[in-house]
Each structure stands twice: as structure tokens, then as C-alpha cells.
Image 1 (cartoon, helix red, strand yellow):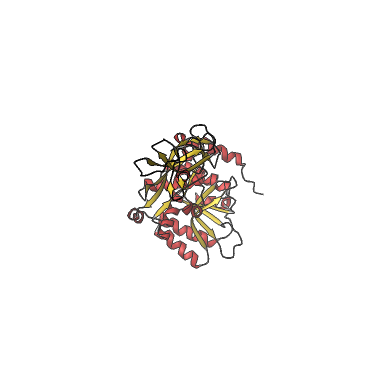
Image 2 (image 1 turned 90 degrees about the vertical axis):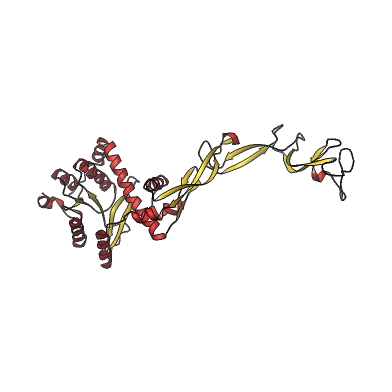
Length: 359
């Protein structure tokens, strides 16, 4: 009976090449998900990607659900397309943000600037220049005229014996009237309270799609796209750059996802990565990157398609977890082999019996 190698072995392999492997896996992540976002921009004719702030995090709700990535993952993909010139960052608005958690939703508490009491009224204020009395304008109303509630004199003309100060706050506790009140901003997310001077400024961006740059960047190679159309005409469902949740909770993206006609599985029947191996110095890292993904995802069939062919040590490593290996000398030949591989079987290939053919 087949017993997969302990997960700790994979972790050890991963840790032994953490820096190199991390760079490779990050690039694979960005390449696959950048293609998915490029396709989304094309298919929907999106001109702008808007951002919102929610619980201290900058989110892109318009594309998050489509990419099936968390907030950080989407931000990394958008940043990669910004660097490539497809997206242009524009400051849409500036908001006060909490210095503790970064959120931008506040409850503003006001208090008297003299005694600190929260018992305030706000209104339009008049100053009687003759006696110096200051109060809300409704306190000066007497029948159809204005009269000072302090000295009893009628107010004759604005600018002569009285003036309108404008909007001001009146404290019900100490009676002070002031054009300003103390403001305390209570964050609705974390509950911290700060005066305005302590708040930070948060820029919310929108990203403009550069249509010219978008059209100049290639998507799925034509031959691979035609293969997918032919397979779909036979009832085989093909998805490019499919994200699959691993047992660890991490999402892994594969170049191809395959579901056969009549499959009752909610997840793909087969996932496949197509990886160029023309740089010998990177082969080990690229094979290990796929090895870790293959161990983590709970999919019955996992395939790695490579060009040119890789060495025997890599074949043996992949065979320990029953990875279906497809090799060719160039990309065009590889696509032909992928087509044959997908069409010829819905059962996992026993690589142990076929290693000799791969030498």
C-alpha cells in the first residue's frame, strides 16, 4: 500500500532552501494571479479598480472575489501590474486614519474647550456691541425684532450696535461660548481615542487601467488556448490559473485545472503546472516549489509539465508523491503531450512503472 512521505520531510526540504524557494514560489504566485487579473480586466472591460478601507485594511472588493485571494494577495498582484505599467495609481481621496489600527471610521466626541464638559449646544451667535453680551441668536428674538436679553435695548443695525459672530458652541455647564470645541476621535474598529493632531492621513487609491499596455501583454499562449477550446468541445472543463485551497489553508495556483464529463467532484479531477526548465540553476527550486504545492492540495491527480526534460533525481522525487510528469524538448511538443495526457486517462499514472520510459 502506498504511504506518502511524512509532511515533515517536505517542510524540511522547504526550509533547507527557504530563501531561494520563497522567491520562486512568490514569482509563480504573481505570474499566475497576474494573468488571472489581466484576463478579468480584458473580459469585463474594467477601466478602474477602486479601493476601500475596512477594519484598517485596504481592500479591492471588485476583484477580490474573482481572484479568490486574501487582501494581501490581491494587493501584491495589483502592485505587480502597476510595476508592469498596466495599472496607474491615482490618489482618489485622503482620509483621517487611526494611528493604532489604520481604520478610517470614527465616532467624534465633542467637549467644552473651557471645562471639558460634553454638555454642548451649537448655534448661530450674536454679540451686542453696546453692552458686550454674547448669546445664540434665538435668545435675542423679541416679537418681530432683536432685543438684548441682558440690557433690554433693541438692536438697530448690524455692524453698528451688534454683529453676527457665526456658528459657535455653548456649554450648558459653565456657560462658555466658543467658536471651537475639543474633539476626540474614537475609532469604531479598535476603540482607541485620539485628538485630531494625533490622527494619520490615509490615501485611498484607484488604479486606472492602461488599455494600451494591457493589449500589449500576452495572456495564455495561442496553442494552449486552442487546446482548451478543443477539450471543452469534448465536455472537459478547463480553467487557467485555478486557485486550490491546501490542507494548510494556503491557496495554491495551478496553470491548468481539469474536470472530466460526469465528474461528481466539487474540486478539479486534475491540476497541472506548466513550467519552463531551460535554466538548469533553477530546476531544483522549481521542482521543490511544485512538490510542496502537490503535497498540500487534496486533489487526486497532480501533474507537472516541463520543457526541456529534467533529470532522473527529480523524476524520482516527484514519483514519491505520484506526480504525473510530462516532458518534452520544447513548448509546442509539450502542448501536444499535454493534450494526449489529458485525453488518455482519468486514472493516476503509476510513474513507478514508467520511470524507465522517462530516462
